[in-house]
Image 1 (spheres, rainbow, N blue to C red):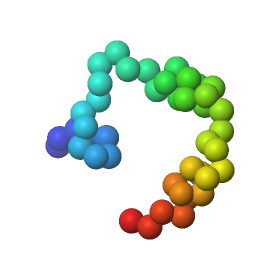
Image 2 (image 1 turned 180 degrees about the vertical axis):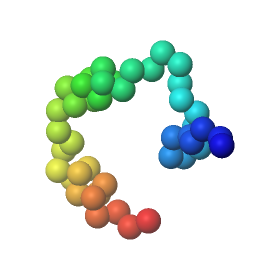
Image 3 (image 1 turned 90 degrees about the horizontal axis):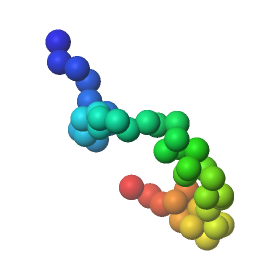
Length: 44
């Protein structure tokens, strides 16, 4: 049985740690409201 890939079809990246990446992303703060509104209300 093949190993499942990450959504989007990208294989796992060697030496990539999710926790430091996410902590760095969150550390940048919140999105400005106009950008957040656009992201949330955007229709596919």
